[in-house]
Length: 300
Image (cartoon, rainbow, N blue to C red):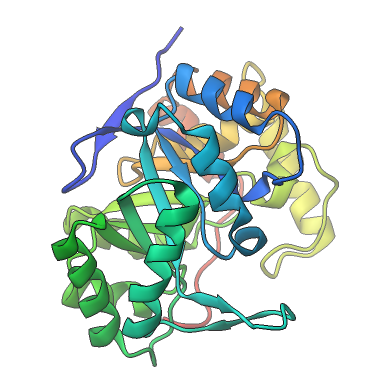
């Protein structure tokens, strides 16, 4: 069996497993979160991703509790930039220096740690006060509250600006067999600048994990159904989820695939796919040939 592979991000002196644990799917009221997270660590997963937005901070709290005694074994990724309204009715985009410098302290308390390995801006628009935002992250680095910082975005115009103007070490972006937009430009841009890629959405909202066909990124139901059936039909020795995950992690530009995990079964399937043999050049070309892929229409 192929073993879990690891990469290193700039400034982070710790191996990052080629699959990571996306904690967004976990619910603070669910039993067994501690067991699931600790089993993931035992299986070789090193990066755990959360955000202050998720369940109004409770996601950070449950992760912090689960990591007691194991904090040094993992890479902690958290996100900032969205602020819940006081009445709880929703949240507003707030990438200001003041908010970031305040929000990090609350996250550190909930996570029960004194530093975050990778602090990501949770979104971003071309009209943001980017210099102010960057100043906030660099201040946090100087204070030792974060080791490094990055961006969570699918927008090429925003990603280009941060590559040119900041010291980001990673970008979290959506990428899958059904969302190949990053192949157009952003993956190569990030690789050329030695910036890591944390790929999310590798199973396309469940479409590449057995869920019924639906409209997706401009594809009609019949189109997604046809594409998924073709993916299923080729390389029969590999299951659908394995093909979806390996297509992403075997791209040399990708550092890790951040997979949303909620159950033991999902963790087992993720580990099995991570430990499966990488796609050959022929296999990858066969998957790419199924459809022409999509391009960014906005935020170019």
